[in-house]
Image (tube, rainbow, N blue to C red; front, side, top):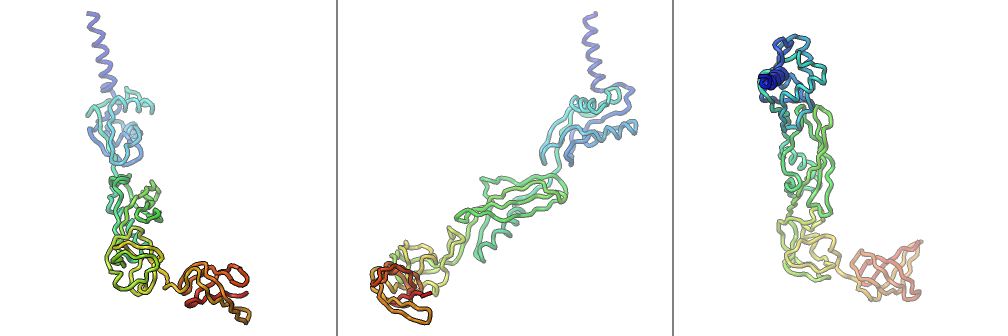
Length: 322
C-alpha cells in the first residue's frame, strides 16, 4: 500500500507544477500557434493571460526568448516557459497553465523579392553601357532565393557596382533599412549580357590590311568585353589598317585600327626639326612603322642619335625643337 502512494504523490506534484494550484493569481492560456514581430518573444504574444491586473501586466511583458529569424519558427513548451517565469521571480504558486502544451512561434517578415532587387540593379548598371542593349540577371548559383527581413518600414539603397575585368559579372552592395535603421548589407551578384550592332569581319584579315566595305558587315552581337570600344560605324573603319590579324566573323575593335601605313621599318625618311623660329631638315632611318599622326622611333643618320618623331606624310617625320 505504501509503494502505491509514492507514484501517486509524484504525479500530483508534477500536475501542480505544470497546471498550478487552484488558488493561482493568474492563469496562462498557452496558444498552439503565434506570430511575433519584435526581437524577443513576449509571453503576452504567445498566451492569453487572465488574473490579477498587476501580475497579468507583468507576465505579458516577460521576454521568454529571442525571436526566430524572419520567416522561421521555433517551438516552446510549458516547462521552458516556467523556467523563464522563475528567472523573473514568478513563483509557480502564483500561476496556472491551461491551453496548449506547447506553442509554435513564427516571426513576421518583409519579403524582398528578387524582381525588386533586379530593378535596383538595372538602374545602377545600365548607365555604364552608354545606351547599349543590356540584359541583367541575378546569379542563381550565388543568390538563390528572395530575402526575408524583419517587419517594418522597408527601404533599399543600392551602391556602386563592382565589375570584373571582362564586365560580364558584377556585384552590387544593397543596404537594407528597417524603419530607417540599417539592418544589413547584402552583396547582389549579377550576370551581364550586352548586345550591340557592331562591325564584324566577313573573312580573315591579316595584320596591315586596309579595310574596305567588302571586309565588313553589321550584326547584333553579345559583346564579350561589354565596355570595350567596338567599332559600329563604317566611316570610322574604312581605309584604316588593322595592326593584328583578325579571324572571320569577329567584332572589330577600335583599338586595333590605325591610319594607312606611310612609313615602314627601315625606310629612309626626311627628318624635319621645327622650333625656336627655325626649321632643320636632315635624313633619318625609321626604326618602327606607322601611319599619319603616329609617333615612331627614328635614328638621325648623321649623329646616330635615336629620337621620337611624328609621321606627317609618306616618308616624312617631324620633331619639335625646344
